Image 1: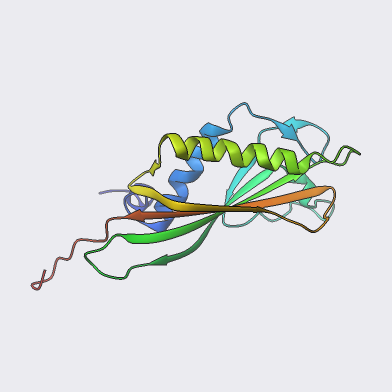
Image 2 (image 1 turned 60 degrees about the vertical axis):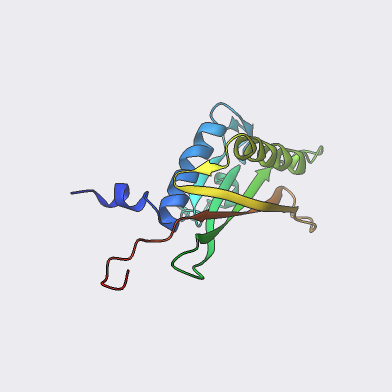
Length: 165
């Protein structure tokens, strides 16, 4: 019998999310950015939302830099057509200095993702569909800098097992 994690990786939105997180950890291994505590570190990668702060003194700076892998939505239009799953990647960089390089850091993170999926658009059982859209936040949220990408994937739908299949 398969465990829940293995079963979830087969052909589900959460399976795609987990596979994408695993791929992003490989992409960013050894790639460091400024963090809210003044050190350099790899971006943390979280599913859906940031974890809760451990104490009242924690704020978003304790998490930055980070990438959220957010399940947006899915569509199944026909059992004969591939299902579609939309995932948003939300990037947060931190730079408390006067150079304000957070937008550049976000661009670097986005470019690394684009490089990975451009070389191989497969993630688990899912295939990346075009277009890919991205944007930088236009409001000033210094010392935090935000950007996002929307990725749309498709995968075979489920096999029917009833008498009408």
